[in-house]
Image 1 (cartoon, each protein chain N blue to C red):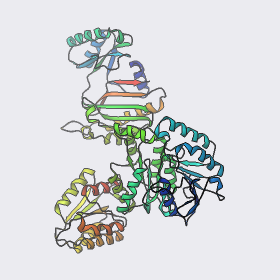
Image 2: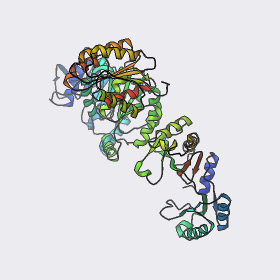
Image 3: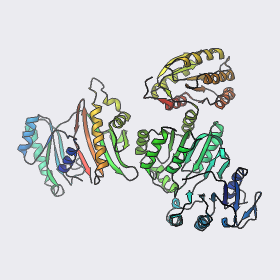
Image 4: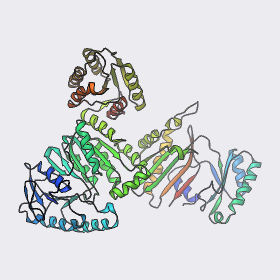
Length: 212
Length: 427
């Protein structure tokens, strides 16, 4: 698995922006980010040896003020002291809490089909609905838009109950770029952008996992 | 390049024994005896059907274009060697007991690969039913029935499914240009058969049944190119986890993830059918009707059926023009007026003609009206939905003989119309 910084560097080189965030080592750095960018925020332990963040309770969401931030920081600091997490420890991420609809964008090198790209609805029910669509990579923007429109839950993205429609064009561009990465980068086996939070024009990639 | 048009055939493993594969093949081959030379090879039987047999292919003096091998897998390498020596151009290995059965079979398959190395001879199979080309009177299979001539090609990874397809096609008024059971794809693979069909003038529509796919990237590249000219309908087996396990033992190839396969079909313009019934529904409309723009009118003598058809149209994203309810006592003359007035309209791509048999209904007359309308408007699509059973049976036969597809259910008719509609063109 690529480290957080390696992942970020790769995505940067393809012009794929992550959610507004800062990798902090000291509480003051995290507090500074939160005050400047506004609460609520999320804290996440970043460690190469941490594959399943949920199981280790390695993140805390919806932190509303500085006092809560302090408590949360201390909890995560304690967890990150665990032996297996510590060896790959890169810091604690402080992120602006992103709102909206949860999506998944993924890519992998399939042994039969070669590089493929996936798009779908994320969230807690993702495994149940399995509302996902694949394409052989690379794809162009027209194909990416076709792909987005093919999911069963497409209507969710077009604006409902007064919500603004999601910027399909921008979303499609991210898909195109991820499909380029999986087709061009020889050493990369899998990419997981999960969740990608979308709301109107805003697209926030909240978590990244890249397997080499 | 494969040719699949032999002027001479040797059947290795021809047999007198009732119920044997060797006898089935021998019978089917003799159907084309006026078109080509047939030789039966069997060292243990002197005469099979009306022909004197040979001990080996090398005993045949004339050249042999195609050899069909239907003997125990263990002696296939030896016999194949004879074929290479004789200069046979193409071979179909019907025998099973190769890669699909596990390790010993795989070793046998490797042995054959060795024999084929750097040779011009091409091999179809093993573990297959063979090929059929009705217009050439070539039936190199042991299928119990022969299909009609037509413009549909069918490539199948499963052999037994072909029997069912032929049987069904005969009752659905459909005919074939070429049927291939491609088996384990040891030498000639699915992609090469597709390229063969691309050039084949007879073939207008292609159906593929597959479980695992060996050269997926290349397959989609070729299929995309071909489907722009000849629509490709795919029925995929091994979609579920359990289905996949069955697929592996069946054809010795890995079934890919169905979700990826399905996404790629939609990416490259291949049509996916969900059921065998749908394969026929699609094949029929694709080979009999033109591609049309997205607006269809519904003409019916039963209000409820019209409403249902409109619902289905909406679900499939098919745009509807007029819904004309001729009411229960509609005469054939009334049908004719409505049909012609709708087809005349510039914006209408096609019509669906629904009929339920009521007291005054004349199914045969109505069918004739539809057939005449099709002659007047060949560029528009006409689909019939003559509902019911025995009362409209003769009319349905007449319709389909004249290449008007009839569907016994409104949903099926709309699903079929949906695939000939060009959704990207403005209606």
